[in-house]
Length: 277
Image (tube, rainbow, N blue to C red):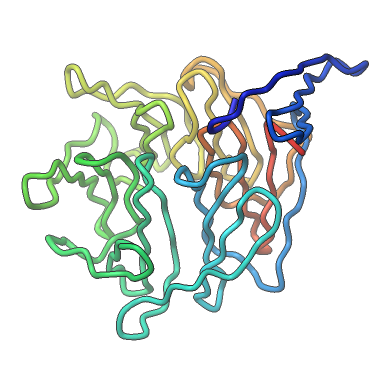
């Protein structure tokens, strides 16, 4: 299930949920569509699932004062890192290989090395969002609406947009390695796309969404333009609204175990955990 667990006992509760007693004696219950607010004494403006921390529901976040926060699956604690030169972070992201990036208000990109941060060279800043991806292949969007990626050759490369798309808004790489993009179209709408790495083409995967989809191709999550959470089990061909989810959501991020974090317009973090202690 998670990390190096060796669960010796399993049972099914009367409500149908799966319960596990792991090798440390900790009991876990599998949950579905249960959203919980995880509040702190500040308003979050960016949240990112943390794949480098064992357990369930770990995340990084940045609040509206530029303070880093971390959640290891239970509560939020202040992060210890600050950006070089006193720069104020506004966004944070975690690659599926565990690389942590931050973006400041000027669109300058930073990468975390141990307990410190350094400016990531080989622009082109300013960036619209911190990268998403794995070692050797990172994707991002700059403030001109260009889709850009890093392939390890020494610089960011501008990628092509699908027919009808005029500007990239956001991009994400799922925990299964699938690449998703949200773009503005020539009709004034937004459309989501999935990238086909075999032939370099894009397939439309939804419309009128507010961010690039996140998750996996068979368990995809997104936010509508009105702030509702929706999900798809068929690669974005059809979407359904999660009626149990919080409203007024501005960002979603998905952990490798399937837990989903949401950040609403008021700066409150919500989590839909796959497993609860």
